[in-house]
Length: 337
Image (tube, rainbow, N blue to C red; front, side):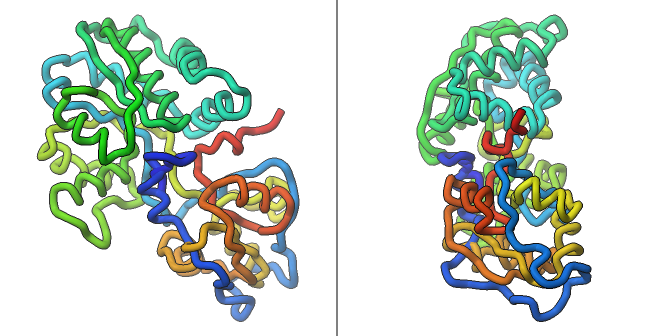
């Protein structure tokens, strides 16, 4: 669902939002049968708190939307130092750092350019980069995370000797053809599963289920032939991911002693959880039905909110829902000092 964009919303999120969740008025299965948990009564009812925390998707319900550099194939072949420079970003970038980068821009009101430059200076050793030359244009979509990542890529390419610049582009329907042709942009920070399914549709036509999965390497293997057919090359996926995720308040996580969705299911077998998310959540396989079928979670109620937006986060913080759909790299998840 990242067409996260995204992420949190425009582009990379479009795909993510499509896999999001729910329908108004659905209330799950109630508290009929325990899912192996030990809680009873309203032990898992909402608990208010300012700090939000994402529970690990340890059963891989969501597709792996890790940040991955996409490069025009002709450009990559003509500039052998280009992909290794971008892979240096992937080797250093984590989801926690991506959250902090987004928070610095969205919450602290720093510029994306300054935030990107500081991260590159701290995390990439320019002296180790293979040197190249020539102009390279990095595309970035019009949402915070994509803009930051585009500037990170451009700064690293600059450190590797390229004359790199950033160009803001529109949605995937607009920028992907430009990246494939290499006429306007040659590099783009992509999301692994979203771009895999997009290229699959471009190559094979619309399908109900694309080849992307919750496994990074499995998805990258599926991407390889699709990328070659499209005239693209992809670097190494980073650990950083921007994908659908489910958050609770830190207070609830601490009270229950849970860090994963499986642990939440074990702790909350009484069906007292209240789920918050977008209208389509009760119908989407990777939202309420997936939580029920993959993890055995049961819900007392569903509250129609938004897809990873301010309504869901506010409902969590105010103790109106127990668990809600967010995006895994949302700056609002930054640890508060």
